[in-house]
Length: 246
Image 1 (cartoon, helix red, strand yellow):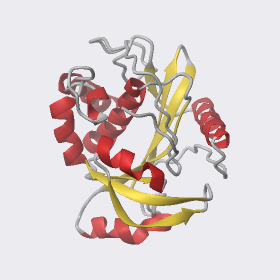
Image 2 (image 1 turned 180 degrees about the horizontal axis):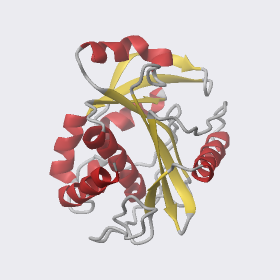
Image 3 (image 1 turned 180 degrees about the vertical axis):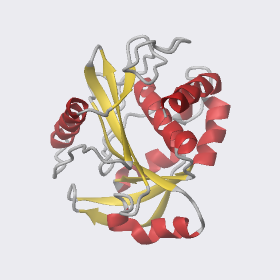
Image 4 (image 1 turned 120 degrees about the horizontal axis):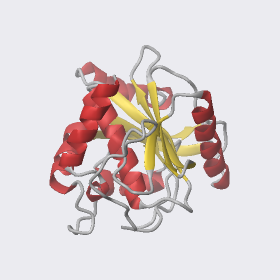
């Protein structure tokens, strides 16, 4: 799997080494939602301290890549922010944006494209503000975070279609690795002063890929991110835990 060479708009993720830290247990610590790794936890960011840590990580990684703007994580009811950590040191963060009366963040540039999905009755959501510390993450870390985002969107909030804004240079990567498809034309995103494009993946497709490849990193040779997701058995246990948190 190649290393990412450019940053998505409002989505920054560099892939590091291929090492994984899987075991078959969920961590007992209540501050962690789930982990399939012995050295990596994922927690829900729902405190001022957690939001500040996520904001600092986003700012650090965006500034390092020369992206403009401020990207603070706020306490917004229609957004779910996750933080990956190792020994309480932040490794990565992403936010799942749920549809609301004010719309998605991507509506600012691509409302017409997203409204076409709403008109068909689809429940839409997006991934935004994704940043990983390139010195500490791997495909396994990023796979766990994205998979958990899928579970929140699909199983807890019953969404059908997941959107993401990326740079044109990143489009082929997201298409081949996760099944996203481009919608509409590219536009300049004023939040980061970079030209971006809107992409979408149906969560039904993600579900099919998880059933086929989830948890099989190293065992299958496919150009896909899905082998770095949790296995279907692990996924079922995580979903039950998430539902129990509601």
